[in-house]
Image 1 (tube, rainbow, N blue to C red):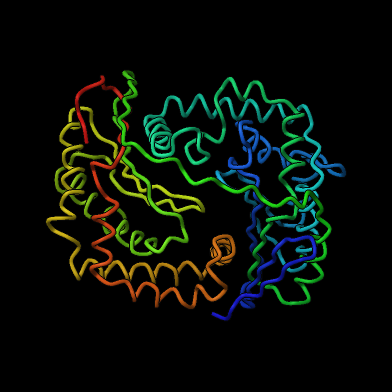
Image 2 (cartoon, rainbow, N blue to C red; image 1 turned 90 degrees about the vertical axis):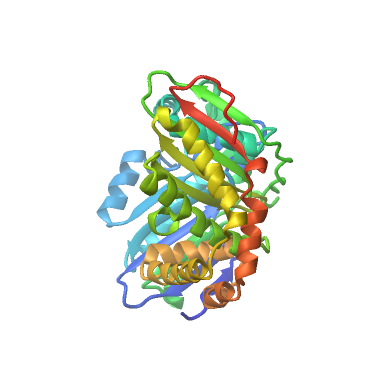
Amino acid sequence: MNLPDRTVLENGAVLLSHALPSNPFIAFRGSVPAGVAAEGSDQGVAEFTSRLLLSGTRTMSAAKLADRLEGIGATLEFHGGEEVLTFQGRCTRETAAETVRILVECLARPTFPAKEIERVRGELLNDVRMEADDTRARAFRELARLVFPKDHPYGRDPKGSESRIRRIRRADIVSFHEAHVGPEGLILAATGDVDRTLLDDAIATPLSRLRGDEGGPPAIPPPPPHRPGTGWIPMPHKTQVDIAIGAPGVPRPHADYYALNLANLLFGRIGLYGRLGRNLRDEQGLAYYAFSSLDARTAGGMWSISAGVNPANLGKAIESIRGEMDRLRTEPFTRDEIRDGKDNQVSSLIVSLERNAEVASELHRMEYYGLGMDFLERYPDVIADLTEERVRDVARKYFLASASSMVVAGPVGRTRLRL
C-alpha cells in the first residue's frame, strides 16, 4: 500500500487521502474535537449537538438535506463520542464536491430549530429509559464510572441523565457548537476514486472555507487513580444477569498497547472468544456470552470482560472468570496461541483494507493518534516483533482480578460475592 497523502489546510484542518482507483466510490471519515471531553460540567450537550447537525442549516431544512443527499446517492452521518464528534459517509467522484459542501454546511451553519431540538430530546429520553431497563447496558455504564471516577469524560454517559436532558436549552447547544465545532483539530480521511485534482477542487476547497475559533482542541485530562470497587444493580423483573468486570488499560500511543491488544485477543476474542469464551460458554455452559474488550484512547483506556449468565450460575461464573485470569500466571499463553494471534491480527487488517470505509477509518486513526503515515506498512513488523514473553508479561500485569472492578446487574440481591 502506497503512503497516503497528507495535507494541512490554511484553516488548520488535516486532509488525508489514499487512491483506490478500482473502487468507483469514495468513502470518508472524519472528526472534530467536540466530544464529551469538551463539555466540562455542561453534561449531555455534546451528544445533543451531534444529533442535530443534520436537522437543518441556514440554506437547507432537515427534509431538504435528506432529499438532496438521497438525490445524489450520497450518505452522511454524525455521531458523538467521548473525545470527538465523528462524521462519515460515501459518495461518488461526481458528487464529492456537493457532498463535502453539505458536510461543511452542517458543521458550520446549523440552525438548531426548536422542533428538531424537541425531537432529539425525545430520542435521548427514550434511549435513557431503554438503557435503564437493559442489564448489560446498566452494568457496563456503572463499570465505566468505577474505572474512570470523579466525573472523568471516559466514565460519563454521553447522553447525560434524564433530568439533565430535560434542562438543556438551545442556547447551551449554540454555545457548545460555536466553541468547539470548527476547523481546528478537524481531520478528514478519504479513500477510493480520488486523485490530486479531485482532492484540491472537490474536498480541500469547500473544507478550507470552514472557519471557527483558533484556540485549539481541549486537552483531555488523564483519568484519576482507579480504586477497585463492586456494584450491584437489582433488576428483579429480568431473567438474565450481566457481569461487567474491568480495570484501567493504556492510552493508544502507550508502549504496551500492541502486546496488550494481542493478549486481549487471546484471552477473550479470537475463535470462540478466546480462553474465556471456551471455558465459560462452550465447556461449562455457564454463560450465554463471554468475551473481553480493550478500549485505548488518547489519555487512557480500559480492559473489560462482559458476560451474560443465568442467575443460578452467577457465583460459579464469577469464580470461573477469576480462574481464567489467574491461569494467565500458572498457564501462560502458549507459543501456538501467540503465533495464531499474530497471524489473526495481520490477516484481519489486510482483509479489512479491502473495504473503502475501513481504509478511511484506518487513515483517520493514524492521524488522530499520531501513528505516522507509514503505519500500515510497519504494522506487520510491529506485530512480528512482539516476543512471547512480552505478551505474557502484559497479560499478567494488566489482567488482575485484585485490580479490577465488578458490576452485576439483573435479578440478584446484594451478596458477598467478590471477584
